[in-house]
Structures are given as C-alpha cells and as structure tokens.
Length: 112
Image 1 (cartoon, rainbow, N blue to C red):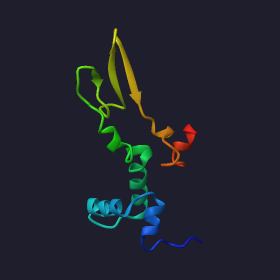
Image 2 (image 1 turned 90 degrees about the vertical axis):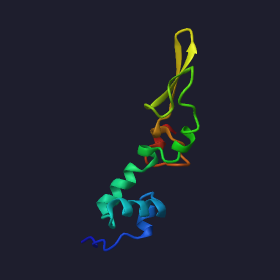
Image 3 (image 1 turned 180 degrees about the vertical axis):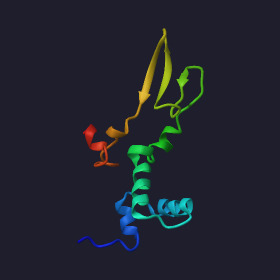
C-alpha cells in the first residue's frame, strides 16, 4: 500500500525541477498550497521543454524589429530574416534538442 503524501516539501519541489522562488509563485497564483497534481502540472508547464525558461532571456536579446526582420525572435516559433533576392533565413530552436546539460531527460536526449 502506498503512503499518502501529507505535505509538499522542498525536496519534492526540487525533484519536480522547480526552484523555491517558483514554488512561492505557484502558491501566490493559487492563493494556497498546491496539491501534488497541481505541482506536477506547473512542473511540466514551466519546464525548459514547454516554457524555454533558461532560453527565453537569451532569445529576448535578439532584435524583433528591423528592415530585414520578417518575423522577430519569439513572435512565432522561429525568427525569419530577409537575406535578399527573395530569400529568407529561418532560425528555430527546438526544445527537444536542448543541450543535455540543461535538461537531459525531459526531451533533450532526443537531440543527442
């Protein structure tokens, strides 16, 4: 028989890939402690695979407007730059192939 979880602790929060700050934000959003299912949902939705949480700050450094920019970084799922002669170059980041050092088991390993 499985033991019932009485309370979510920081060990469990960290096992879900969340920081203490993120856990506090979850409690603020819900206006209460999350249950285990809710913790799991936030964990997945805020993972690198779904939210690009470690990549987003870098992507925000790229220009989103300009004479040669057709689609700015982050507007869709890729950035598109006019390279002349009716051609464009598309830059796309795929979370499934994210560096293994950041997230080796939740999608990143498919790119190894």
